[in-house]
Length: 121
Image (cartoon, rainbow, N blue to C red; front, side, top):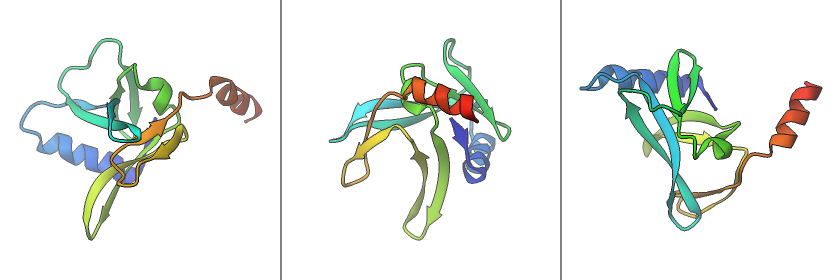
């Protein structure tokens, strides 16, 4: 999992503005919506043992181990527009989405394809 500059900047702002001592963000997925799952994000005050840890652009992100196989290769972005702003996920494991954008369908990452791509890179 990686972050765009915009996502890293926004997460840093959120952490700095928090009322509690926060060291990063935890990302996961939960069953929700008509397409299957939605992304979750929570403040991390103390890292959870067993979570996968990513440090990208100076930001610490922990990934719920139940979500790791579904989030491999995902790029987290932050987009601001006239109608609002939100974090978005560009996930190569996404196979579908509901019409309202509240949930997505994810497949586990293809580890064989990832290993083959790394071997040829």
